[in-house]
Length: 452
Image (cartoon, rainbow, N blue to C red; front, side, top):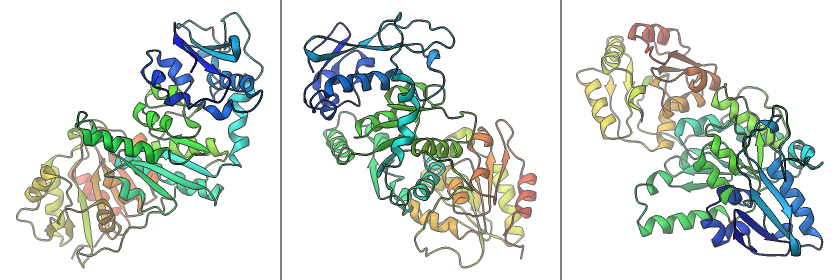
């Protein structure tokens, strides 16, 4: 790091420590300069004559988005080669760009470098054949992790020798481990750390996580989280970061952290988005139905007779189905002699399960189960009925007949039907399904337990 002043960052064309690890880079106020230097390290400058090449490569990487809409970006990052072989990275003020114009890499009046166009489109697919290690960032939530899991099967189908690691929040890490196509799961605890920011233990754990994250260099880091928190994790890892472009990402700011940006249709289900992004990175087109490749543990303690699982709990109150509706549904099953299991994940859900089961024969409230054990319970169910919550999506991924009840979210983007032909979505935003409709749909589901 040669200097940092007047919104400028100087990178010396000789071997230096990692720029992104430099203390002054971390505390610099110019956010765009930090992003610009995120993926440049001493290897780019180590060889004789490598400095100029690295500068040109950096110029192309930042200026060129991996999509067709370069002229629509509202901000620019410029570059010039200064004295003594130092590359200067400038963060210019926002300016309007005419429709169809190409994003400039120096002064606004100059033409973009010839290397811009091929750098935006060609290297990703050309290098895909050489990829050996890939890191996936999808840390939360449970349902979204389930929707992202098919990329493991797709990538290994395309590259059977590919080594795949995954970053997941600690409560969900055990679920990702049920997919044996994932070599290593790196747990992170952002949800817990944010409530204990001033604890020494939090910072010790955060440093340990970073050490594990950077322990290996990856050929591609794919951010399926599409949020700034996931992009920051991806940026810390060693390897070129891939993600959706500004127009495609769930949080547009996350795209600032990506070296390679991909145009993904934002108006489709998350499962399809994840498969499309991974295919774009490795240079293949996803084919066939999604394969989740989950292997639950051998289960004990489940009812020895056919049973239905009802999942009433969710982290968002607006997704809840009214208790009166659940009670009507459970009374129907009880009168029909069908056994029902009501799992729970926290105290409030346990209390709700007890209220719903009160006085009904054949309706049981099991002990709390960790995710692998819950997956085993779901995998043996004859039918699963649940709100828009992670375990409901997990049931569909496990190939069980699943009825998903939507009250606040849209099944087009969050439904279970893309996961399995045995899944069906009912309801939608402001249109909670009635108990009669759910009962009728349950009776039509394949494999539904017969009334005794």
